[in-house]
Image 1: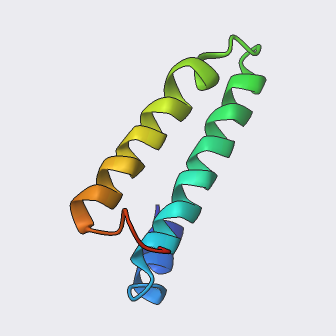
Image 2: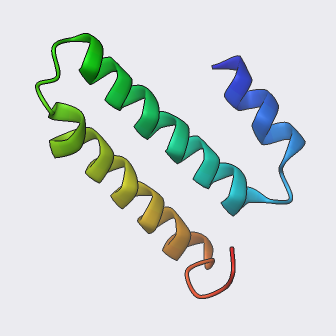
Length: 69
């Protein structure tokens, strides 16, 4: 939690890039958690698509969808 806050404060001018790194970290952690719990593929079925959809909506909402982020 504090690492995310520190990263957000340091990269407040590069919001899209820092958000993309956060999304990648959340996806990797959810896949790793799925692996640790017996690889039931819930990360591939639910977690990663939900996180990717939220990221996509964030990009559209902040007006970053058309540019080079």
